[in-house]
Image 1 (cartoon, rainbow, N blue to C red):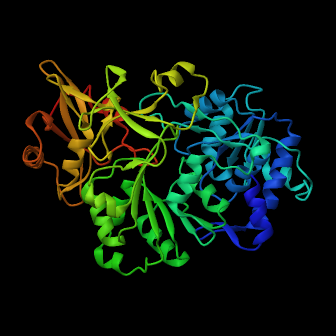
Image 2 (spheres, rainbow, N blue to C red; image 1 turned 90 degrees about the vertical axis):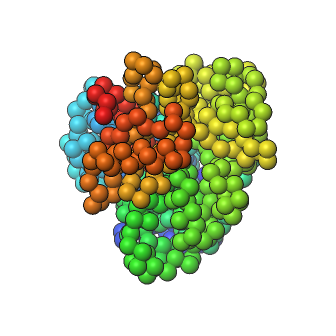
Length: 515
C-alpha cells in the first residue's frame, strides 16, 4: 500500500501507467486520485473487508480504483466485459459487492445488469466517463474529497479474483487482507515472483491482456517497483509490436494464443520492428505448443521465460528460455516449496519420477474458495499439499511436465488420453491454426477422441484434409490417442487468457453425431 506513496514522493512526475495511444497517470496523479477514491469508499460506509466490483474495459480509471480499494481495506472484483448480464449478476451476488463501478462504454451490459438486480442489491452504482440510467457519475462523487487528507489505518485491500468457469460456475479465490502493521512486508512467494520477473524502476511493462484477468497483478508489481506500465486497449498483434518499439518496452506478459497471432504476421513486417529493448517476455496461463515457443525464442531471443501456477497460488514453477531448450515441454521447477506427483485414486500416495499423476505442491500460499469450504478442502490432500487439478509428471531432475487437467482427461477403451498432447501434435501441422480435443460419447470405447480444428486462411475443410490430419497424428502418436473424427470450425472458444473452453466444446459437439 505504501509503495505507491513512496514513489510519488521520489518521482512524482514519472509516468506510472498509460493506455497505449491514450491517457496516462503520473505517480503523483495516481497517488492523489487513489487517496480520493479511498476517502469516497470510506464515506459510503463500507466496512473493512467489504467488496466493490469493477465492470470496465482497459481504461485509465481502473488504477485509482484498484489502489483506492487497497487503501480503504476492501476487496475489488474485476469482472470480464465478455460475460452476459446474468453471469455478472451471479458474481455480484456471490462476492457480496456493495459497489458497482461500470463504464459508459459498456452501456448495454451495464444497464442489463442493473435491470436484473433486485431493489437494494449492490446499492451503490457509479459510472465512469459518461451517463447511465440508474448510475451516479463517479467523477463528481470522488472529486469532492481532499487528496491530502489523512486516511485511517486499515488492513491492505486486494483483488478478489474469480476462476474463468471453464468447467462450471466461477469460484471466487479469496485471501486474507494484509494487516496494516505489515503493509510494507512482501510474502516470500511475492518476493520470488518479482525476482523471477526482474522488475525494477527502469522497467517498462506491457500488458496486452484484459485488466480483469489475473495478470493484472503484474501491472501492480511493475508500479510498486517504480516502473511504467503500458496497457493495450485490446490485444492486436501489430499494435503490440508497435507498442514495444514506441515505448521501449522491457517486460511483457503473454499467453500462447498471442504468440500464435504474432507469428502469423508477415515475416517481413515482423522484421521491421526494433524490439531490442525487451529483457523478459514471460508467458503462462495455458500450455504453449513446443513449435510456437521455439519460433518465439528464435525471433525474440532467449528471453521467452515461462511459469506455471494459478490464481490460487498453491505453487509456482519457472523455467527460463535457455533452460527450456534443454528440457523442451517442461514448465520448470518450483520457485518456492516443492512439487509432488500423487496417485489419482489416492492423493496421499506419492509417485516416482516418470509416472503421471495429479500435480500437488507443498509450501504454497493459503487460500479459500469464497463460500465453498468443500471445494477449498478438495484442493488439498491429507498432507496439506494443494493442487490446481492438473495431471503431470516430473523427470529425474525434478522438472515438471504437464499432461492435462483431470477434468479434461479422455478415457477411450480404458486408456487415458491427454487432450493437450494430441492438440500439440495437431498444432504442428502447417495447415492448422488452432485445435481442441475432446472425448465424445461412444458405445464401444466409452469416449471417442475427437479433434475440433480451425484451419489457416486459404485452407478448405474437406474429408481429405481431415484424413491427412489423422494420418499426421498416427505418425507421431500411438493409435489410441489419435482422433477418430475431425470436426472443422471457424473459431475455437477460448477465454481471455487463452485457455481452451473444453466445456463449451463438449456442449457444442458431444451431442452431435460423430464425423
